[in-house]
Length: 433
Image 1 (cartoon, rainbow, N blue to C red):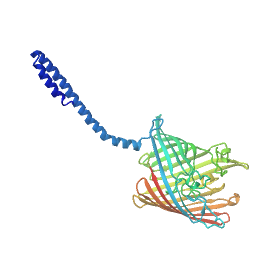
Image 2: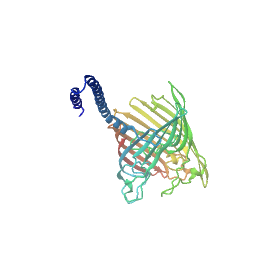
Image 3: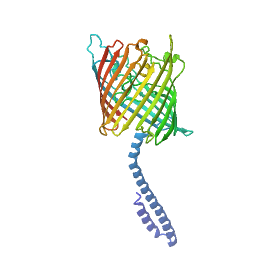
Image 4: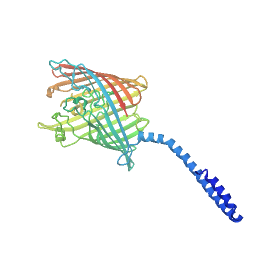
């Protein structure tokens, strides 16, 4: 209608000129011209607004894509990031391992049954949330919560496909330029390294074969003592929940049990001192690093109080496409950490691995680990030594999607010198988001 309006207005203006004086006619024409100018300006503004709206529409898909990828709303209105890994393990065992998907002890064959097993599981799948908080006195508040489905199998006919949730990590951190404070559940400070393996996500490869490992509640501080061209010296220390590693009733437990570690009434103490190359960025790993760590705790039983202690040395280095790393430890009552072949005893052991990055997508890794008891005659134990050899190849289809084929040979020797063996083959697919 607006394009016809000026024409009609002029027509009626000409008709009015015939009946009015020249002065009145001029006044009305000036007013009409002014009104037409206002209409013209309004039309121009509307067309301009329509053009801007078209530009905004063109930007909407990019904005929607950005929001879909990075924005997760939290109750505190702070940045929140959802992440996780879908992990599929298909495996074959030739013997009788304690765990079918991640074996760490070879058991004796069961009478009347042919040894061996085959199956598949996704209970190593994990999901987590990382959050960023405000800055307090120059320290950046952040935290992480991660859970997987390795918490057990329900007592049901098809319980093997119903992995129960299990808490992995739940901690808060205050990070500064040279130090940090952490409160929550994280990997322990003692012997923090693990072999390179895609199949060992819920429990690392070589666990109970020389690789000490535990996630536990703790309060710890971290500090960079020196940093320069010669490398970086860093110390970590704190207290940890006194987990004793005792086996409890296999039925469901609603409250934490009062076991020898809890009855000691004191926390465990751990610390680690490391020297390594200065990382190129805040989230980069050093090209080389060596470290020494220790742990001390107590366990109170009916027969008295026993000490739990350990000393460990670790190293790692990468030069071009080749890398190697490992650990060595000695200690007593380390069953909670996977030492002593899951027994209350004195033992020593460790592991070593080599790595080869054949291409940007394909890598090969292999290693050996062992845990051997001291003074077997002094401890009422059944197993004297545990040894594992592993080799794997990991291929990255994309940075998010990887696959691995791993072989492990596990040998568990009893105090009677009888040996149980298991060959384990594991095909793993993992997609991280």
